[in-house]
Image 1 (cartoon, rainbow, N blue to C red):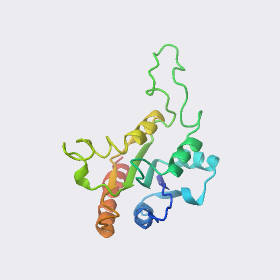
Image 2 (cartoon, rainbow, N blue to C red):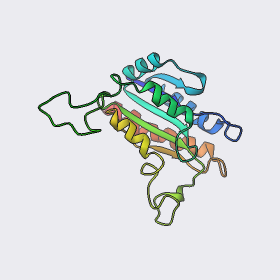
Image 3 (cartoon, helix red, strand yellow):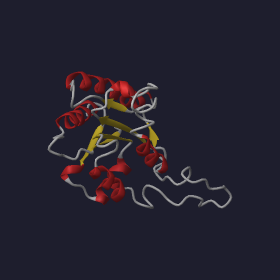
Image 4 (tube, helix red, strand yellow):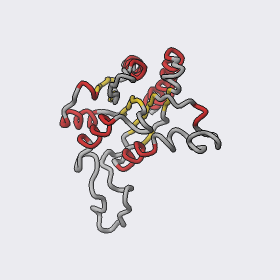
Length: 197
């Protein structure tokens, strides 16, 4: 049986208690438990760095569920990356083979192509993306809000699976509809990937 690590990066604030994000985290755990051994980390409950290293080692795929705060991850999630993504575990300096020319960012990763997925909740509506007159200047969610997170994982040698976004979650939340879309996304992009492989 394959193993999946599902990580909840929500950090609570008075204006963002996290029910929507936590609900999608629960949907992921429930959906994937049918086909995978599921490991979890809920950042706001605390974590031990060495235990996180072991979870990543055991996981065949890693899924991050988190809200977007000010066009980025919550501070707690950034702190998690800073503490957990350690030299010698997630990345090296690259260029260990003197016969192969080293190129920054392309030979530093130690995660050996481990797949990961980003699932973000945000108040930005869908039409803010992918349109020339939208707030993100025609860029997609992955090219704008999630770009730096993808680069972090690329540097560590991980491989992105298609991202998921739940939009307009404060102004016009539609949890049941988004939860159903999320289940289908997980089944199509994670479950099917590993049942075909």
